[in-house]
Image (tube, rainbow, N blue to C red; front, side, top):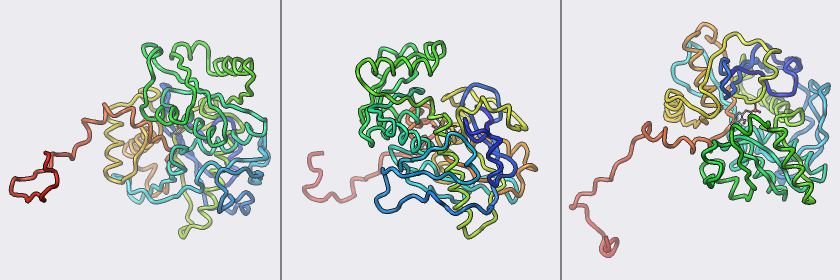
Length: 386
Ligand SMILES: Cc1ncc(COP(=O)(O)O)c(C=O)c1O
């Protein structure tokens, strides 16, 4: 797990001009050694009126023109259309986490509530990517990721919403390559919506690379007369990143209309593929996770603890690790966080927890066989067969 900046391609240096000052915390769930989050500061600055307000009423699953915020209009490429796939704006509310430093507030941006089967931060990227696929006349989508990739699941659903076939290349362990991948977590949704799944081993993935693998499948599909549109791992390219530009605009607008306009000092968010930009960002401390989709017992205990105390269910791969890292950092360096107002972005990924049920089972309790003494009267005729 690693410390990161605001997202892949959009140069990290371009966003502070948009009313940010300070730090962004992000987390990368890989095996690289970095602090598990990054910080940006966002004040309730004056932003232009929303020129891309989402159409109300029947706007869901419709296409519309896209106007970037003025502070992002120098970025390239500028998309000219977007497809409304997410339930946006997602709510922001105060998150009563235990053991915070004095006068520190943590608020939660609920991107996990951006939908149901099509939910999480990936919806934001797909709004731009799927609009492009449709504009290019694609008849199917190809993408790639880990066996429990939230991005692949979201893409599979979005594809079907738009009447496109979806071809997924999923990375798994060598021993499982020739077995049915099962229906756990994200796989259940992907397979229910009829995505085609090609399994590759972690070794093949590492040797051949995600770009070559998706190109291979793309060429095969073209030779069969299909018109595939390839979305890279995590939807992470310059077009998909516009989803995060829009998320930034959304937060700014929410701040403008909030009763309390104090703004946030820091934004903390889990992230995947910004490693290549890490050198452009300023990360004061680094920490190490076990590796992508691998959890320590401590992390899972933390996810359970937070669910139990606040009702918010974090995912094991991204937001769980990021929040764990944040609270650990707060415990180790309370003076750096004291009095700050932090916005933590919950990026979704609930379905990934289903892949952790074995590890989670010993952590949950609260069940028993209901005590029903013989003296409890039985209604005549009901349950007689037992
Ligand atoms: C739940 C969740 N959070 C965060 C991320 C990271 O997003 P990104 O790769 O766009 O930084 C992902 C990506 O797979 C994800 O599924």
